[in-house]
Length: 135
Image 1 (tube, rainbow, N blue to C red):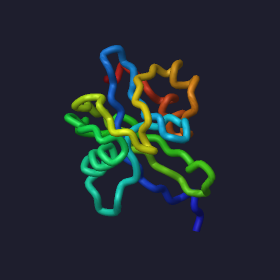
Image 2 (cartoon, one colour):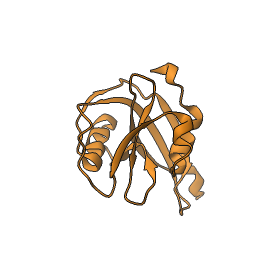
Image 3 (spheres, rainbow, N blue to C red):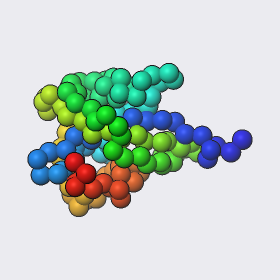
Image 4 (cartoon, rainbow, N blue to C red):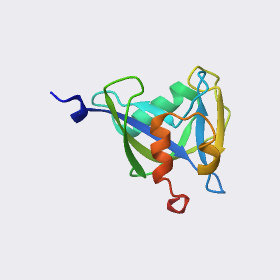
């Protein structure tokens, strides 16, 4: 079997501020990531997104777009496996997050600002397709 034909599905949530910037979470390793994570087998995507955001940052999602806004694929860092990122637009109740290894800071970025920090490959792919006019 060819490993390139199999993907782990990851559900992500992008919060957009009034100026069109998107929210990223800084992890303890210094890298920035989109909130969200791996979908469990049989799990509803929106339920999985809510679970992941709560686990990572402890913030409540008040809105999830009815359908994904973006879809990207990337190879996992240091692995032969691949990830399919299904990215929804979300709104958060507030920015009061719980500090964890997966979330040491939350910050809004535009594309140019985000390209100046350490990003996971999946975020770099997202930057290539992000269009603030879609929101």
